[in-house]
Length: 510
Ligand code: ZN
Image (cartoon, rainbow, N blue to C red; front, side, top):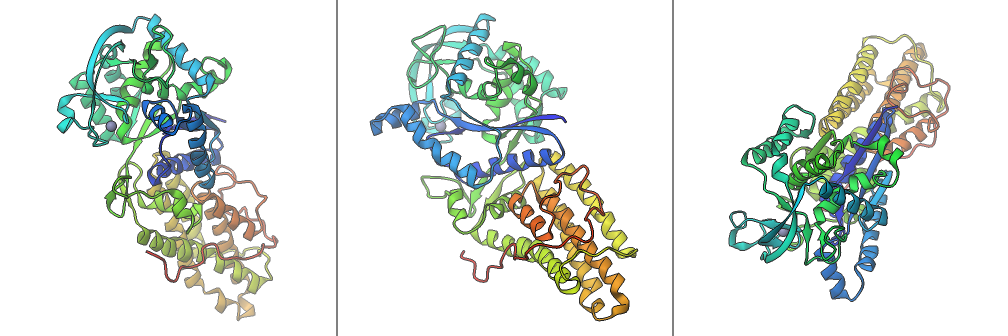
């Protein structure tokens, strides 16, 4: 068993989960489920980022403590991930005392190793980004992301000598020890490193809701330093040596493309400064737009996963986001496209294949999976395609290309539906001399449905279980190593109750 430690970005507590957050968690969850299916010992971490000036101000406005505010806000996140079947193993909150202690400890370690120095900082600050901007990057002195006026801040802070790490980082990225995917993001980071890195201020005076700086107690530690440490504090750094040794370094950090600078320069430099191993891969995904418009709360272009879940099951949203949006690039959420995908891919292709297979087993063989006969070239081709399908979809999933992986699986589903038309079991059933041929066809279809149920498990966990329950094999092992081989459906099994997986939508609301 190989360990695989997978993380996503932790989410800012002072917002509600939208479809963009859902894309990241669903993709990471699919990857975690996929690795478990391959037999790996997966540890999948998500969480919330709870310290910040914005949280402090919002709590003040509401007359409650920041902690009370966070405890109230975290509920929406945990609830959403539960409804979307996000199978995380750990949920880290940056207000967890063990996390706060890890932040202090790592800060002291970097300080004692001589990587911090006192300096004056005067600059333009965005409280939403928790970051400074140079005038050249901020037209009209507004935050380029939040379009709000930047604040002029002057403080005496502790600075991290990030510039001292730029050559080492560049070498590590170029020689592949620190992998950044997709290539466009790797090139972006190499470009930043060629321009040269500026030192960053690691402490703040104006932020009260943060981890107290252990060497300068009048200040708090910069929110990004605090947040990035979640990846190690959640797996035992500074409190469980054995767990930390088992899980760190992370095998993959999955993040959005807007935060690669923090994850691909500051984070690895912090780890190098502390003498800790670097994560193996940082994968930056793209963004989701809504009906062709950029996600924006102020402009009303926001969709919350809960809104989709009032009309569709979680599996449908999971499928749509991974099939429609290339994970390494950008894509769009649209209600009409979602309805189209639902009817075409889920109701017609997958749902219909399973339903007609089971109905024919019931009608022509009293609901019992028959023993197959020898078969001819049609069966040989289908078996070969099934074998090729698992190779293909695994290769695509390994590269975080869920769209291509699903296309490979749907190619097999389409082929199976063609096979039904080619073999016409309803005609075979009329001729007792063709009994063996009919048995072969029914078996081939049932076995294909079993293999398809395994392949779709990471993306459609509930549907996969429904398929196996209807096939009568819910208690069988679910894995890709032993179980994904042709011919393992035991003949003589009585199928379960048949129910449509995805009832067709006649008048989908747009
Ligand atoms: Zn901003």
